[in-house]
Image (tube, rainbow, N blue to C red):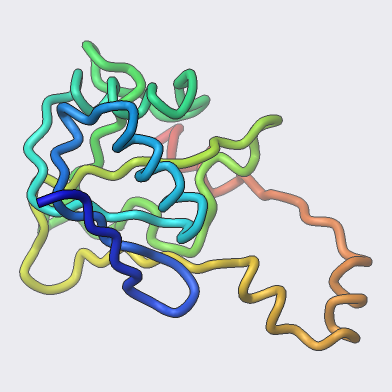
Length: 162
């Protein structure tokens, strides 16, 4: 069948089909990588991979690192399990954020592998900040150039100490 890359929104995102990432070859990986660079976010449906296969796929991009605050799985410390039970009052990452922007060298990408997704809710949304910036007026761009961003880690630190 071959790989098919289909743009799914105006600013960000493409779905890639016709591929199983557990046995991706170098040629197909180049197509996948180019799709990520072109679309910012890529999606694969109907994948059934093990943690080892997920890590092997991730390592095709670069070396992996451990999250500085969250513990990963005991056998696979690079993989952080995110579980939200219906009775849990809080959502993990329930606000707009960029993963690991607070580290000296932010992560190039984050991979999500959903094993269970509710029929409704459970959405993960993505935004293209380059497109948001480009949509600003010239005066607003100049205004934003005068700001510096301070990442506040207070909430995360409080959550980690409970």
